Amino acid sequence: MAESDSLIRARELANAVATAMAQAGLPAREVAEQLDWPRATLVRFLGGQVVLDQTDLIPLLAICLITGPEREALLALNRTEPVPGWVRHDLQRRTLIDHEIRAGATTQFAPNLVPDLLQTRDYAQAVSEASADFLPDAPRRLDVLMRRQNVLCYADRPRRFTFFVHERVTRIGVGGVRTQSDQLCHLMRMSTRPDVSLRIIPAGHGDVGQGPCVLLEFGDAAPVVYLERLVNSSFRTDPEEILTYRDMLAVLASIALGEGQSRELIANRVVELYEDRE
Image (cartoon, rainbow, N blue to C red; front, top):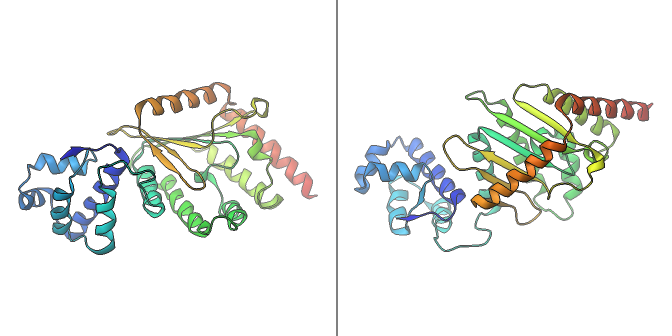
């Protein structure tokens, strides 16, 4: 069994197998016995620490009753050679949701749009409609985004969400004045939650940062950075890359307005929008 070159790939495989084991009512001890594996080996796999060789994965999938297209997708995912863009879009979205649920701390930088997890449905719908001509799966992306926001409602354990938003976002007219006003009011409400920190990057700092990104941190695993792009979104796990994004977020923290100042700026923009509607 080989150590995984991709933390994300290992977690995706582990999550799929663990779900199948739970659905089939199979305890880890019983599965390990059927495979004639040390139980510790299976536990390491289910913890996302290793990716199995194909000869080890095939009988595991059979025991867990994973067949058909799901089996073929997991076998393809398990290939050990590097494959650019190894995560299919549907698997990638499922993986992102799983990681956001597991993360104890989430930090997102949004230079041009309201952060995904804080978008109202009307705002997200307007963004989706604006992308429909060049993104055929825009409606699907909208559905996934709305489902991702459920992570803000989970109370199973403490979580911390930090959002850095450029001031320009408060002035970009997405979906019209009413949609923008409702969105900003939603940001103000969310920013009062004890588990949410929302901070505005002042307009004077221009194009600070290097595009939208999400840093996901876990209590029992290495951190992950998710970079969403139109075509080739990706998960980054290299320690040096993670450090670079940490440094970038630290710079943003040093120049961003405080939480109270950020709420005040948003409130002032809401007043301006209200006056525009008069």
